[in-house]
Image 1 (cartoon, rainbow, N blue to C red):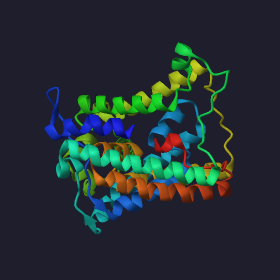
Image 2 (cartoon, rainbow, N blue to C red):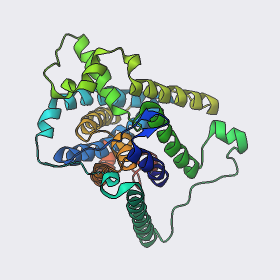
Image 3 (cartoon, helix red, strand yellow):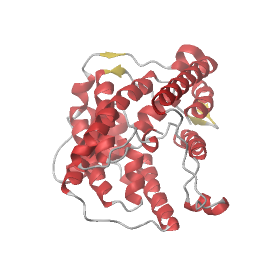
Length: 326
């Protein structure tokens, strides 16, 4: 997914336009806020039950617990915008773009080498620990052909290619990579101001783009419209697969984990300039080193989260969810 993305993104970002549309990537500073925010986000992924896109997907699929996660994701995002200026005042290194530093071709080569190193290291470690690589489960009962396309599950490779191409389509249409969590901050803050509270002195909402989004109707926000699209698409997928069956009986510990996880997801995303879509996928696809820093810090947060899951009566996981980090 990442390899395809950088091959598509870097030449376009170097040129600054695509099919007449001005484009720009997600390139952010390498600061304390990214490390702390990504770590909190990774921890929140395991307690809340998913990432930003995963939360929207499972809400659309009828998961009642994830609706709780989504609500507190928005609450955490609002708190994150309130504290945003303070976090940005902490020590930070300037933003670094591989495209600007090495050019499109050089940036692609550096990225592909880094991806190859990750593949070699992770394959080696998995073989040492488990004796062989984990295989994707395939059964005779899985649908084939068009039925599998409609009902799933898709092969992991097909999903990776589709995500890279859809992110590139987003770049062409919106002028920037795919993002999700800025909409959560917007939804939560609009609800907060509707209750009579004032956010005009918050640094995050004084930025021109953010101020414009806050003043405009929600349907003017591209990220909001795309997020609704994810929910509707997941609902359609669940209905086609006959798996839409909400369960409202949520155990107390699982409910607490959803609340805490949602708060950490929202707060962490604002500090780290996005989630695993905007900061990790979009950042690396944009050639920004903050995307790589996000990966390391969020992976550490996931490792801690995996160990905390049993305390909240959540099923333990052997490893970080592929769906969450993809």
